[in-house]
Length: 363
Image 1 (cartoon, rainbow, N blue to C red):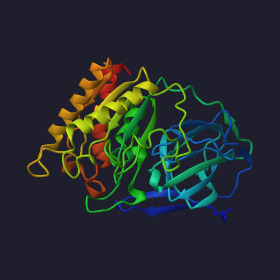
Image 2 (tube, helix red, strand yellow; image 1 turned 120 degrees about the horizontal axis):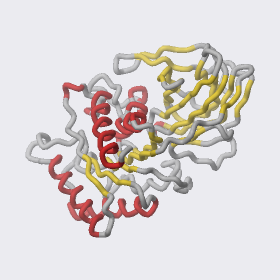
Image 3 (cartoon, helix red, strand yellow; image 1 turned 180 degrees about the vertical axis):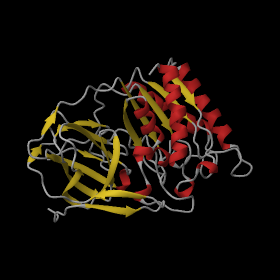
Image 4 (cartoon, one colour; image 1 turned 45 degrees about the vertical axis):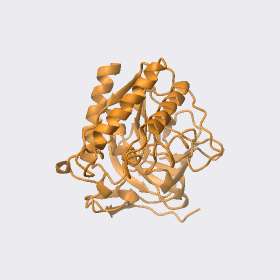
């Protein structure tokens, strides 16, 4: 095991702000195994290793309620992932993992009584994988029953936008850095919290719908870099699914309409087979515009393509496929790394999505 250290560290981020980073910490006396009934895992986790569940997808969440004044997490990192820690509903610090196994401080000096701690995977699959090996509580502390599952759940399927690529970056001139990618502050995660819904994200930067390097190629996996980690699609599934895949498909030119819409239609059919009752939303991209590149009208074209997919689904008897339009990002709202949406733009998108879910599904 890595050498353990105490204390907290303040790290300056590329975006000009700072995050309090949890360092490896002295162990606490009350051990909680990762399979304990009071621990909630939200998103896709692989359970083949009995030592603890593993996650790779952005926004994967682990939470527990406990009585006590302090809590640690015992974790194994493969790569350089960051985790957002939330205590009693408030973001408090970030864990920046070191490759290998360690014990990390989640909370110290809490008032005696009941508390809830959440850990969200801020970074996307190619950054690394995190394994939950257990938790530790202060002397006299105990794990409490998990709260009731929220009434609704949302799944977002997408690319770098949905991962939160560079949303905490200072401007468009910065390039990717894991410290400025924050899935906790993406439009999907914000909308889910606004509506008190569980959230799952299946996204990877640069991925497309068709014809290559696609999300459909890896959609059935719990760990997208591990072809053996088949996802079992346990119930209950999401009540709403949003697909935000088009930005990279249109990046080097307008894709063939028939090829792209047929592939998208086939993917919608796959989703429907897994989730018969889910509302499926086909989203436009905030990184696409009719103004650039010159001579193309990508924002209008992608809407036309999505309308064709919606029409194809209706012809197959699926009337629960809808279109949601996200406005092109505005530079006055700030720009993230490599021209990606800022946190402010994600907040604007989240408001649009939450309003649609309220309006359409009465959430």
